[in-house]
Length: 213
Image 1 (cartoon, helix red, strand yellow):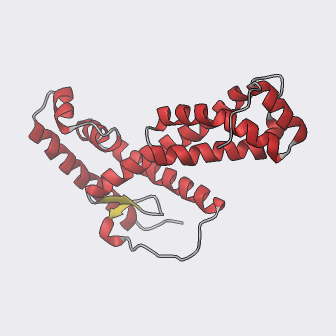
Image 2: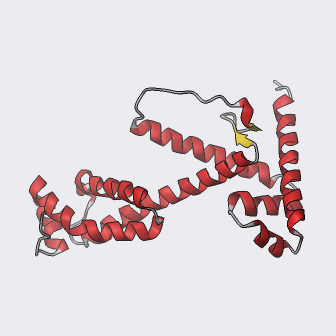
Image 3: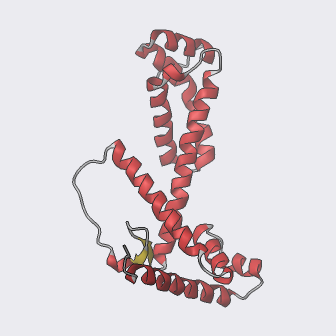
């Protein structure tokens, strides 16, 4: 097991910045890794993404060292990278949760940014391994889906819109939504059910409406 260097963060960073050698990188890597891991985990609260984000951050320590300014603390630079990586993951996770919650109600967003019934979507299998570009495209597509879903919900009347936002986008419990809106639990369920129908009707009109030139 490699021992942590007695040199300071700044000294290790300066050594690696000057040498660009694997030995100096490993010494700095070992020094910063425990603190970074704790910082990331405190943000994402999940071990698996913590490991992924940590790996991405430490890879950037190697590949982006040219962007580091030795007059500043290397930890400040690295923690900023870790923060941005963590924030990106959290945003994507929240969007994914919201879309999954909508799917539970039989609502999904298609590639044309319309909401359709889940049964209309046929999954496609592929044996190809995803590239970095694939991951970026997937994140962009997820954002487009999320934006389309939010736009569709925003078009509802407030009595339906606010309750559906609380449940599907903000993951608020039914009981808390009822208390917040001063209505019964059954009213909350009925409005969510009714809101779903209104969304589907509106989208059907858009899909069926012929294009004009």
